[in-house]
Length: 320
Image 1 (cartoon, rainbow, N blue to C red):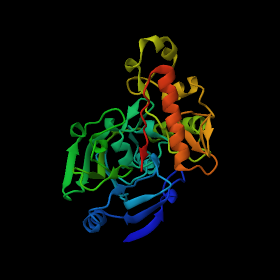
Image 2 (spheres, rainbow, N blue to C red; image 1 turned 90 degrees about the vertical axis):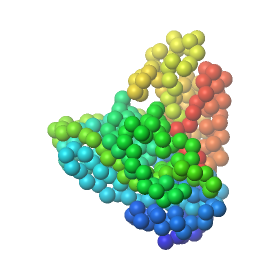
Image 3 (cartoon, rainbow, N blue to C red; image 1 turned 60 degrees about the vertical axis):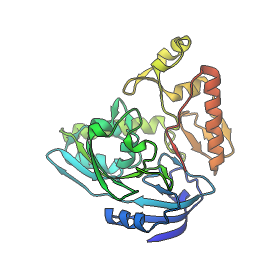
């Protein structure tokens, strides 16, 4: 059922955002097809998953927000088949329950499986692409079902074929009318390996504890704002400064948090938004921030890093 003027702040982890003109909550693949068939083809539309890496505008969205809630999950011979709307937290609980190893690196990772696939999420040296066997999606322009093997997904650093121009899926990219090849991820097949239940559980909890200690989860946030920077892409004159901070992610990178810290941006605030002193790659909503507050801080951070280190920071988040 289509609803009107639904406040997006309710669905994003930032608690920022105005109303969507239309909103459709899809429980099944058929619901998604129904929404796509009956939407106004002249309006833009947006696929919403967990709302963890999206900055909604205070003015809202003058189109359709489609929220797939595809949370089916099963396993056969160490292969998990899960809907794109399955929360990563629930997926990891399922792995523990069935003593399956391979996703321990994702302990504490927010959002949905569809979002993780779209952006090839990674942490602690692991990436979702390492476990993906196949991805099923639907082309919103012609309602054709597509199934891709891992090699066809074009996984790269924090990207995939699903985050390319004209693509979309549950977590977020605005899909504008008139653009072709726009896909919505429906389900993902993950190839894992047998493990010891206690070992898998302990490894996941270790990552969760690390995030709780180092990330500003006490404030509303949407995760890391900027992508880390490939070490071999920066000027050699800065190598001595950066060398102490290089980490594997999964190739040598300079953490964006290190650059922001070195630039003296910890604790800088505009309006109700602040660059976290705890982890400067998080911009937190500390005092009823608006979308403009966050955007202005992002612009300031990019300007300062460019000025100090001649590095162009690239956002990891999505704007709507």
